[in-house]
Length: 476
Image (cartoon, rainbow, N blue to C red; front, side, top):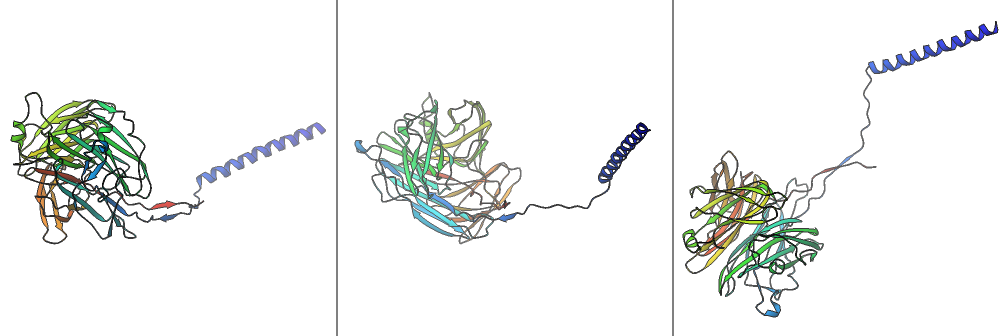
């Protein structure tokens, strides 16, 4: 009897367990099938708008000559003086002089640092621009040199210069920031990468300029390219190149940074002049330094298949095209032959990223000069352009798009200029010295040239860097 009761109780417990499991399963199934009211807790956050940083530009300062005294052969000194034009729209602008290089023999001139204070709450940088020009006329150094007052950067490429016989090249490093900048120079030439003691760990003091003679790092280089990188503060890098043949000066130029490595490099406003005289002076074996050419570096590990197109700006020669393979890690110079005098847009296309610039020369009745033309990012819809007081200044526009661009060029005072830039082409307009607000040029590359009889110079117009963007902050 007792065994039967125990068996009955065990069976009841088993049945109760099964029933409990069934009820739990039904509850779970119901929870998954019945709609539940929405309920969520969002993490608290706050939108913080950083105070926009002031916009900075640096004009590279006066041209420099190496001291003639053999004991001071690497000590540069300023010659003559330069003229500048600068300003901003909708922002206050201040200027200050940077400290010259401590190794220079003259401290009477130095680069100019410009600052535009961005208004509180601004969503874009102020329109801000500056440029300088200098016409040097000495026994050892003569020519026209114009340059943009550029924004400091931690990474830039100088595609210019030479250190062969008669060529002098100086790397100008200007630090407008409040902290010292440590600069490394990676140098490439026609023979490859150069391992040069003294090219790394170069300290540019805060608010000062440092001059580095390129011949001390890469002697006898026909076609150098210098990659400038910094830690700490940022710098504005320029290449001053001068040429003297025998005892006759053959020109001087201040070349700014060219565009970062890319598969397409567009160079606006390349001016070819007195080409007949230059061609007549070339030897049968090879072209000389005066002949127009494109300098190209392939900084990566793969050879580049290059195509170069030179298209005349509206109303000039139709241009030409060129193709060549350039070895990785090497610098090549490709002559621009079969052209005529005029203004051109030069486009370099490659299957791997490259950097590029164009060099041309001019022969006048009494003097000679040369100019470097560099690429730059396309500008936005609105851009301020500074045109310094050089001879016959001109604005150049390159349009890589498939539609004509209607550009308005408005001076700070006076009548606006309307210009149509054809699709896949270029255009130019002569302008007086001053500041110009350019609108309708979104996606166009822009440059400024100046020159006359036996004189030439040019610089690219670069868009401003972005302001600090609002960020979401999530407190702990």
